[in-house]
Image (cartoon, rainbow, N blue to C red; front, top):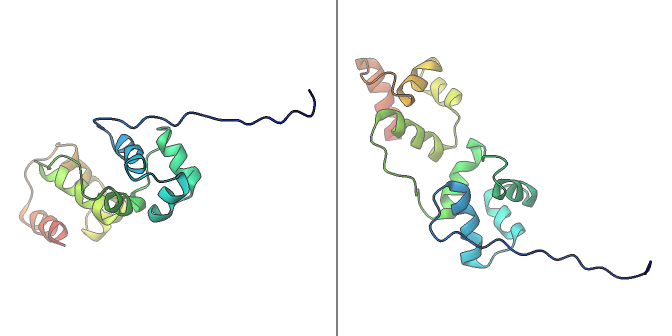
Length: 138
């Protein structure tokens, strides 16, 4: 049997009925549209390998890819933010910014937005409120 032809096959994973995480939502979307891995990767601006690793839940998407991911999913399917820190995180995702880059745009040190995200701070100084409101309004 040294010259026998072998064909390797694998079963496609079934899509989730009620996806809870971003990875599960991303995995369900191509199944709904009948897309291949390459067709899924091109609109996101990544390689098929990156999508495959993400589908296996080995990594989380980089912040720069979040705007394309949210566009691909059709809308922001995260729960509505209740607190200031959650609104900041949502804005980072929509803009594709890391906390460090966003804090530079806010003219703040990196710890200030982090403290709001962690709910360590609930009140904001007037200057900070103004800067954050301008950032969120963009």
